Image (tube, rainbow, N blue to C red; front, top):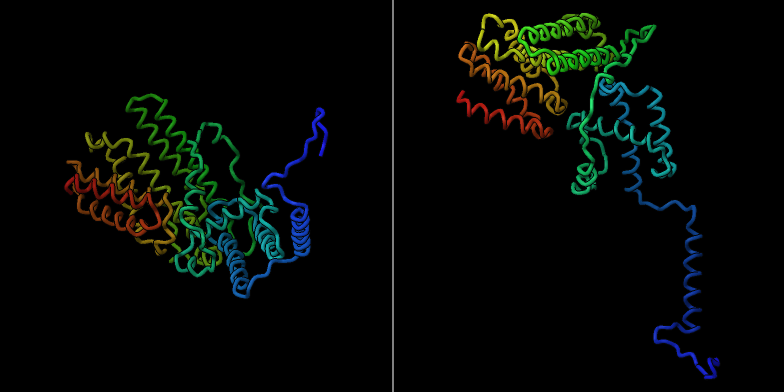
Length: 385
């Protein structure tokens, strides 16, 4: 009861105002919750035996993937120092076992780490990947949201990107009959320089036919000069079946075979791509530009048959680049089939059919291969071949 402006005023409790007793009980309840939370601080969450075993198996499988990367993928990205990275992975897994939360780990290192895990899973054979006891409880909708919302930006490439020092060959050379993966990367870097110059010369140089011919010949010679610098185990003509030295190298470093295989396919694809610039010319003047046609056709045919003869299962040949090379070769040969001057249609059609089989073999892994096979079949039907 108070006195306001000479009037006696009494406080009236609202219908929802808690009483003193209710406030006292609420304080007791909050105090009990605080005590319970404090008693759980520092206590590890309890998990049953099955959960513990699943966690342990998952860590074992995670530890396996860097080993797979070192053997099969490191020659591709050439971005990690082994065994240092493997030691870092072991330390990280040990920290997880001790209760490390992911949000407390180094974000940049985690990005690299999970990239290695993802690449390893992508490159494994099906039965090997399925044998790993990795959790698979994320719905596809959530995975799609994580990946499909990434912002796409077209890359901007100019001449400055190619004026960089190339990787250096280590001196002294590795001991124990080993070779360094860097030779493959030097080839790819030098090749990219040659192809960039080729494209820029065609785009901004003289449009005269003589100049285009000179550009094609100079680029093809540039690729040949790069091949001459390759060590013996990467030479496209090398044959591990008859060369015991290469056999010994591949026994200890199995990625050598992949390097030589990939390098050969890239070379064939580029030679076809370069000389195909003169396709209209050899269609109208077969005799004068027969040399360019021969290089393109031979490269396209060889690319498809090398892929067909490759002894690796389809699950390890699901890269988009391989499918694109096969598709480009098959489409090029299809156009040759349609030319009046072609006398080798049966041989070309056999190669095209082989290309379709290769694309179909990986279409469940590779959306590009699926689309390429559909376009190729449609083109064959339209051509009536």
